[in-house]
Length: 364
Image (tube, rainbow, N blue to C red; front, side, top):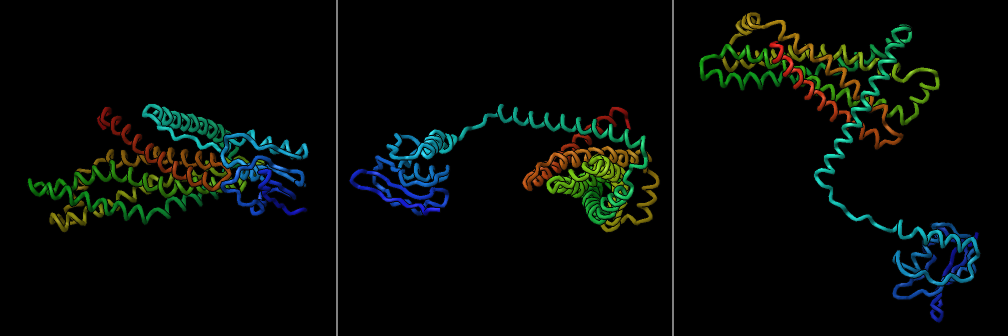
């Protein structure tokens, strides 16, 4: 291997280069500021790759445009390399101009992304349905241990944050309702408002949001990491279905755990409201419980609990699909995890609005 060297001949205006030219040959180039190179002499070049050719062209022609100096005494293969890099010089050196995106273009791009998510989700649901049908025909393939582990992680691990969050929301709702009810001497009706707000709307929605941010993101990150480390490929190689091993247990665990967490949230929210009504409105715990027993309707409790399985299915479908859609790099794992949380929150809000309209129409 011959070290690269170069010197500039002032009389001829020629840059004479020798040795092996590659990416590490930059220090061999002389200072050419203010000098015009008319000839590039490559008679002494022993080896030249695209990096070396780019270095030489950068030295003799700093700008991407303009005439190429005379190429003198180059071996045919070295000349071909120089000419190849020169042909692609302008394209690689060009900086794309900044372009402002219009409102309609932005909206259209967003619509295409949304359509892609919907089509992908429908395709995933179809494949999952076929997998469930195959599992129903062969019950021995159900992953019961994985299902139990997921229920434990989703339900038991989320109890503290769900109870704490709903307790504080119960405190806030009771305080706001109580401050208004006191003005009209209707303090006892705060219990009615708390029951409707906590059981019917607040608890199922807040619990679903917490589970989407905690469990949904974790599912996507876990499955995505398994795809990056080729563990999913290993599962397939063993003749197992990734849907049966990874997806079905997690969705079923969410289906079981989310209604239980909503019930825990109901109790915590009412406990927080009971504490505030005692301190602010002088409603004793016994009075609170008597009023709750008097006005609480079974349908109020069932409406909130009935939303939970629907939220759970959509959170599980979105989280698992996004995890399996991860490409083989860490950045994709982060992007898909973020997308899972965003899609899940949007789905929860849309589903809750649909439930509200449906219940009004059905007078429930």
